[in-house]
Amino acid sequence: MSVRLLHHLVAAQAETRPEATALVMADQRMTYGALEAMSNRLARLLRAQGCREGDRVCLLLPKSLHALTAIQAVLKAGCVYVPMDPASPALRAARIVESCRPRVILITAATGRLMEEIAAESPAARAARIGLIGPQSWPGVHFEAAEALGLPESAPDVRRGPEDAAHILFTSGSTGLPKGVVITHANALSFVEWGVDYFGIGKADRLSGHPPLHFDLSTFDMFGSFRAGAELHLVAPELNLLPNKLAEFIRSSALTQWFSVPSVMSLMAKAGVIRDGDFPSLKRVLWCGEVLPTSSLIHWMRRLPHVRFTNLYGPTEATIASSYYTVPACPSDERAAIPIGRPCGGEDLLVLDEEMRPTPPGEVGDLYIAGVGLSPGYWQDPEKTRGVFLPHPFSPGRVYKTGDLARLGEDGLIHFVGRADSQIKSRGYRIELGEIEAALDALGILKEAAVVAVQSGGFDGATICCAYVPAEDHDLNPKDLRKALSRHLPAYMLPTRWAAYRMLPKNANGKIDRPRLKEDMSASPEKADA
Ligand code: AMP
Image 1 (cartoon, rainbow, N blue to C red):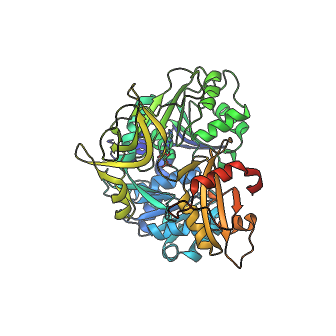
Image 2 (image 1 turned 90 degrees about the vertical axis):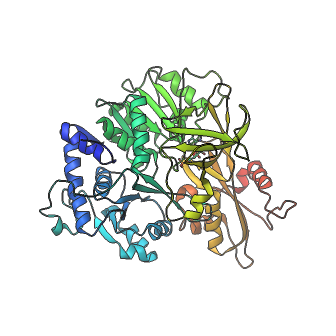
């Protein structure tokens, strides 16, 4: 069959190799044939519940075989899946639901409580149909189960094209509202085709599924695996911060590919869980999402000389990655950063100055991306879209202004330099410090607050620090503030270093002196840590 849309990938495998294993998680396995049949049935059920082309379906589902089946089903029903973080506080999740106004929200027993809290906050959640999906009911679905009976195991007939939206990924927004990045079938498929070919992924591969489903990296694991007809081994979220268990997972699953954010690789390096010549089946390690410290890479490469290591770079807005660099040999200097390399197939990276002219090699400029991965824009936000998706300065089409600073090396490789704004990465999570400040402001108990990030020596990359001035009639301590904030923000966004001020320092223009706050926070961390 011809593959034009993401869900055609499983259908094509099911046609020729229905008995091959598609998904593995703990002691559960699912074949391509079963995945195809179950997702078809669920797709029909979604249609029977009123889902029509382009409708959004939110997935409030922990990573599981069911969640991946649901993703297939939503696409087959002609709809757009919106993966949500089951660990998110209800208030933030409610904003996402309000923004995308789903026809259906799929939940499991484990997320039922969160769903109730979201519904209390969001009229759009109350208007959506709720489908309970879970092991106790599979292969039927509690989702109006009676109507599921008798539904055929063939895909419903829907009209979707490659330029139609496949999913919306919500990422931190600097004004306090999460931003929805719309990803089309063509955006994701283009990278998948390039990646499967470049990495040589085939039927005999066993790939890791480490990132959560609301991270765009997970789409390469998933659709790359389906494209190749490989096995996808989903890593249970509870193993995330247990380096020993992660190493054991790679060993016992005999993985051939590991793909994660760098902080997870650093965590494993720091914990010393990789033995010399470990993971004999492993062929390649890929990372994306933030800088991998060269010292961590050296640690991995020294122990695993049989493995090929590739740095992938790219923002969600240019899914999945836009450039790559396969490290030719174990670096000798741990202070030399690893380049982000060259554009992936169909992509282009431009380093431009303020007038949108190319910067000479060696000089730092703004990094722009053009090409097949570029999202059509932010969900129902033309203004934000126009702000960063700009006309291409030299050819037809658009470029995306990443907010990253980079330089082109004499060697033709692109080197990542840092951010031009206050977006940070912590444990691989993309965080706008402005979103944290907006949430602090909304608490209504502070006169002033500012959030800065300082580099930590730990695996998480950056430490989020909050400087605050309590409102006059409030007697506050960091513990209370953290608790109040945790109702609005996920745990990974909560500041871990706090300092109370009588007045925040200001610069000559009267603006908050953030460099000074950073110095303060770096100078006396132990006093302020909460
Ligand atoms: P996200 O949308 O979560 O993928 O975050 C995108 C941002 O992560 C980019 O704009 C960069 O700032 C950063 N990033 C992604 N990949 C890399 C990489 N390989 N090296 C350095 N920074 C990266």
